[in-house]
Length: 178
Image 1 (cartoon, rainbow, N blue to C red):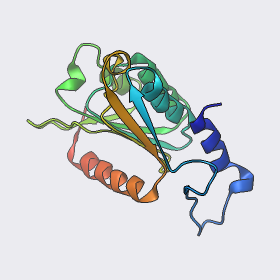
Image 2 (cartoon, helix red, strand yellow):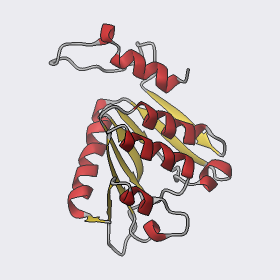
Image 3 (tube, rainbow, N blue to C red):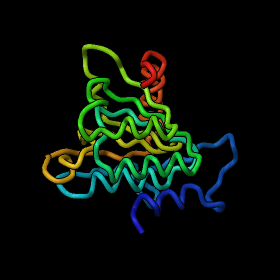
Image 4 (cartoon, one colour):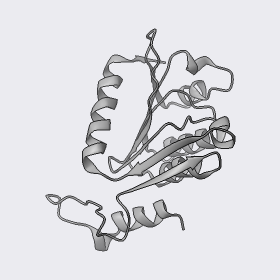
């Protein structure tokens, strides 16, 4: 069982539920670290993304420069198929690149918006169920997994999740439908 799966089960287990007024936080004193780092080349970053997507129950907000790794795209579509609310923000220029999976998402009914600006939307982050943030330099491409020196940090830190959620919402409001 992966670290993420173990953590998610503990976080959402019935024995671990707290009253609505209390927060579930992960600290260094818990059984799991507050954050974890992943590096490429190799499968670790990709697996972090896919594992997080596979565990999503309610929502996934993705803000990335491009998505062309079909393994990640398959997990995104699977979330949508499970009735998880999926929203994708991406760069307008990269959305039409050869191999981009953005058009597929839109055709399947996933909400997709692009920046429509001269500058690039170059973020690479995802928020899962408002409880997990995955962020780093990792491009969601096959080249990133196979060749590039890139990184991801997975964290459960509520302050960082709030900050990235606010950034996502701000961008969502100003970007245009794909």
